[in-house]
Length: 241
Ligand code: NAP
Image (cartoon, rainbow, N blue to C red; front, side):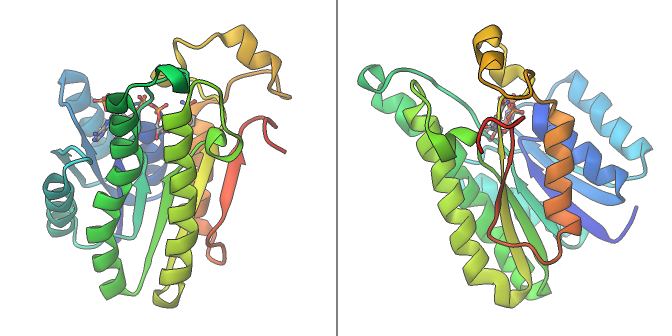
């Protein structure tokens, strides 16, 4: 399609899918990775192509450094440049801290935080050569305010905020902006099992957010916010203020 290229990790469903669609609507070619491939996914890529984008997909686990690097290199070869990176892939494995296994701690930190490291490093090398780029990390309000039962998840999302601010400082001189979005409770598979009534009672706007509302903010930070770097935007119906 155009001359702009975006990468969205974990872009097969939920917030990542909406981010990919929003970027394609704005003229971006798109590279997506995930850890599975199914029939629905093929229809989704076809839809993106019908919207005019070149689409690159690779099954790649962000926790594996070699797979992450291979995905970024292959996406760059296929699409020619990398203007935007959205570090979206993430999971939850909730439990009270006292009952949390080391395995559940490690797997959440590995996917949500180390996964972003594995993907960002090769992408930044390419952006530095281009002297242009924009990174948006998918944090969470619980990385800002904590949440009982989510020690692993909130630590990973707070870690992403630290990574965002540090990279913003290190990379501003190379014309690379780095920001984060901190969604509140958004209507995706991730929040399906949560107690909706209880959640809504603490949200000033009295509803869950839509993944499209996160994608709009991601797009703003990734594309139009040309003088914003090192910032975290809460998109949460007023939960954190
Ligand atoms: P989701 O529907 O579960 O989507 C997460 C995506 O990440 C899935 O496509 C998943 O693939 C992929 N993924 C998981 N592990 C991966 C790995 N190791 N390598 C590559 N891809 C992997 O969840 P979502 O709600 O859209 O969440 C997207 C992001 O927003 C996450 O970082 C999440 O923490 C953050 N967030 C969500 C909310 C919310 O309320 N939903 C709030 C705050 C922040 P599979 O489906 O194949 O496992």
